[in-house]
Image (cartoon, rainbow, N blue to C red; front, side, top):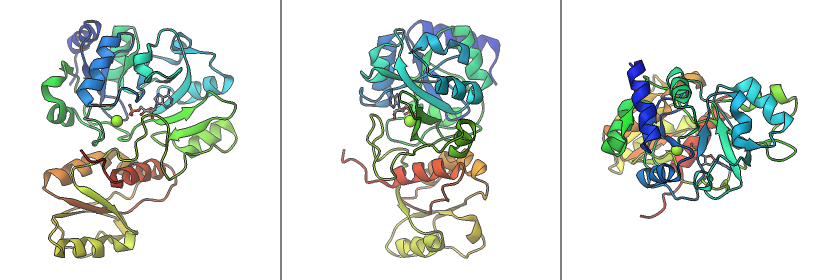
Length: 324
Ligand code: AMP
Ligand code: MG
């Protein structure tokens, strides 16, 4: 549990140029003072993240938007009003308060207001913006509990705020609102359907092949085990073939096959609701790694609702890894 003195300590840590792991509704973030280039540089160092990959600036309320961006359009304001606090990130022109170190050198900046009482309390006590990518090493699975953060980053973080497990479980939806028509750069916690309902028109998605905006490497969100994607009705059979070839197989078993007989090393039956699946996804991948699986067989949910974000993360987890 987080108490007031924890918020004060975290806020002091940020002011002193330190790194604070904080809970948000999406995943745990590795936070630094957005206006302190040295602290921002420490985020990149700690994560092993290339410095050209822009960060998201978290702010305390939609009323602060103009402090961080230039020329927020009517569309940006409409989306901020509807979805903040919440898992929606808006890309806009960079305001002067945002150092280039935080945007990977871009003249645009990604901003959002997180919907988590601990994150909001910290933002309010601190008073500034907090750049916070997910609190994990670059390319690996995002943390959805404070224990995940401690296990992965340990002493590299100055202070960890433990706000319990994250409610949404996948990262924010990133929408580019710099142009005339908004487009989704990354699907996430706010669904495409919700965006379209508010905007009143269809919203373009990134192509399902490789997204080539900065910070969108093909391989990402990946467990240690290799991830193989097959049709839902093939998960059990492909898992069995891999087991016979000597793999320690983990299955993400589609709910329709929950009762199928399986001999895999470890099995997670995927929740039927995409809300529960998104919340559990990264924990499932971490658990399968921890149980010693070297191969995970999974299938993609349909692209409706949160299924789009889950499918995006699974596809990227299954991409070939860059050689070390
Ligand atoms: P995360 O990796 O979850 O911290 O989210 C940050 C991601 O937001 C980056 O990897 C980019 O893909 C995206 N992003 C951040 N800032 C920008 C920007 N100015 N323009 C385009 N995409 C951005
Ligand atoms: Mg991340």
